[in-house]
Length: 280
Image (cartoon, rainbow, N blue to C red; front, side, top):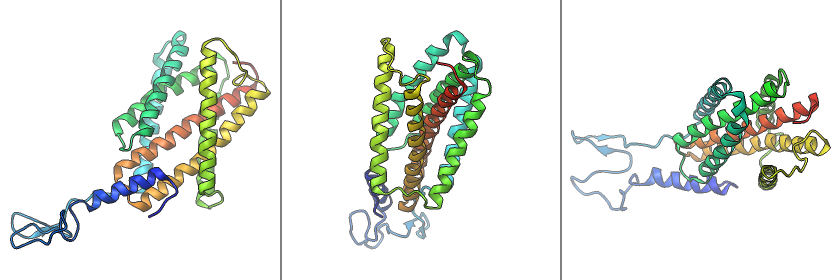
């Protein structure tokens, strides 16, 4: 099965090797089995001498991805609520920045790993829960935007389900050109945000995250790109299922959706604060 995604292509080849290793019609070395030798292919010998089904790597399904995604969202939500209630208000900024840095590093590690690691993905959900909880507390309790968190949550999942419907109806397709464009724009946006974050640490205000024309336009661009990134996630999941990737890769797929949801939520939260007025 061919795909325009090079990462999925490599994973698909690896999955094919896993399924084929030792299970070929002529055994692991391609030799014909002799009398009394184990028979490979459709069966393994048992203690009674009769064949039994060989162990198989269960392929990933859409249900696997849904379950893992809901699990990660639940962990993130619980972590966010715990952070909101347990971390003192005076430590909000420190916890926010610390969780953001740790989450960024952990996210990059997970993204560049070729094998899904459930423990790391769950740890990422916990850290991002702290980040989301502190950001939400900052906007609603400290800045005083009452009801903004619920509005942002509803809007985030509303956009997510809208993109799912558009993808399902093939209104928006993850063509190679579309994929390259979204990935390039995302890389550019993250680079700009990282530079802006570093400059802010040294007291330099670019106005990119303030309540003004530049800040509003930048947030709108981020919301649009974050929304379109779900199309890439849906396409990768669909191709992964079609290619028969092992079940453990459903954690990677769920991780990708979680990253998009958190990014979209933060951008919507910020935009809503701009629309309600005030400068954070």
